Length: 134
Image (tube, rainbow, N blue to C red):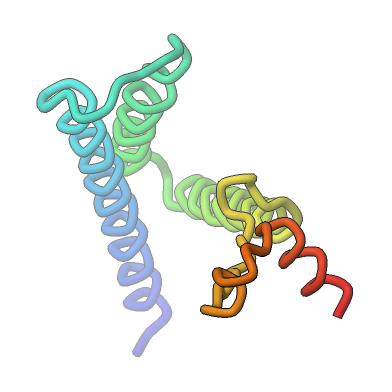
């Protein structure tokens, strides 16, 4: 395979990756539009939500389509930037997910109530204290 053929194949793959990225961003927009506007399953509570859920995917889709007209070297730079930003965002998300636990996700200790406890009428807080001491 010649160098010229390899470069033309790389250019085609770059254009294809931006086209797929643009289609994916537009599908993300359509998903949010369907859930929040069309069916009304969910509602936005802040004005910034409209920008994040509607504006951002549409802008990304348009920019990806527009970038297919740039020189190949610029497309490579944009693709590397997008991949590195995506990896950084997901790494920070994983880090924050591992550091913080929401109150709704805290594990609740299960208490087994036996027949003897019911007969003795032992309050629940005494059962919990005795299990923690053991």
